[in-house]
Figure (cartoon, rainbow, N blue to C red):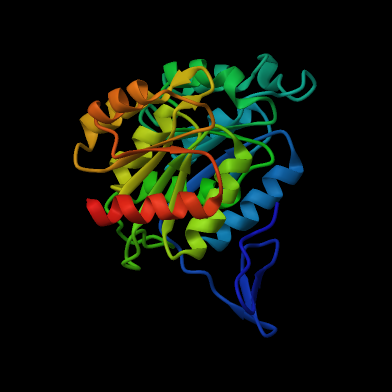
Length: 292
């Protein structure tokens, strides 16, 4: 997992920025993040990236350390792995896994309202329903899309765009929320939209989409109609309730007849788009923004 490339600057393992051989202090954004994962590689790479973004980073490799760190340090956000091998997930004599940790976090005064983003090496859809029921703020599958993760964290921790390492929306660029459960579509859409001078946020399910949309107030939402195990139309209804003025483009790889498409438009979609070329997607986005 590599940090986002920055011209002339890289980060060392302590999260310090260096340019032309000279150390440059990273300005703190005032937020504290706890990463809970049994993988030392994940702990190290995520710590490096997040420190470079201005976060204070804490780590724990098993459940007992995680809950004790939460009690002592009161992090502002928690990144939580789900699966721990038996020889790791038995801290304090308890058979910890991510959901048991999450259950106890919600019983602790120090973390009852702390946002939690789950990271997992398994199929994310396998855990989606339990995560939604547990009030998880986001769900990411390894290998982690670091750009999307950092953007989600910033949106959760700086909903009013105040004092963060990033200033969402301050560039004056139009903001697009792209919602799709397929990693390759999110990755490619992000590249093309950013190259066309849009600011991009991504979500892989309805809960994540609603959370990001409410916090980030996008100018347009591109929504896959067939999210795994979830109806895009139902997600659209939720989004329209929260943000009635934001246009939503329905995006699909399946065929629908004209009557079905007309029904979708009557339900509030700003447009209907088949998954074709990236150029067609960009043109549809431009048309929808011009019309809004």
